[in-house]
Amino acid sequence: MRGWAFIGNSRKAHYFIIPEGKTGGMSLCNGWMLLGTSQDYLEDEAHFSSDNCKKCNRMLVRDHPEIIEKDKEEYGKSTYDGSVTKEIEK
Image (cartoon, rainbow, N blue to C red; front, side):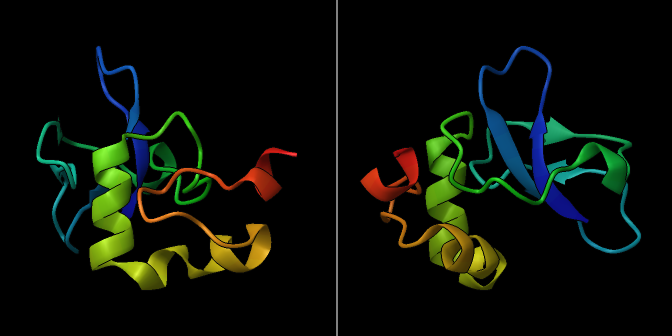
């Protein structure tokens, strides 16, 4: 399972990659832990949303580029930090 989730008091969504057979794990930024979740709770879209943690987004772009390829094709180029480009904001 993988995807973005809002956790407790966090103001931003954090990205989690949870191994097969596990029920929780740490966010890519290592700042948040998610326990006992299902795929219904995780959103694996909107990788370039301003509501996402910038550190998680940088780690996702750097370490797992295959995950965001779909969004890149749909919305255009992304910057390295995962923020949207001027084209997307229009």
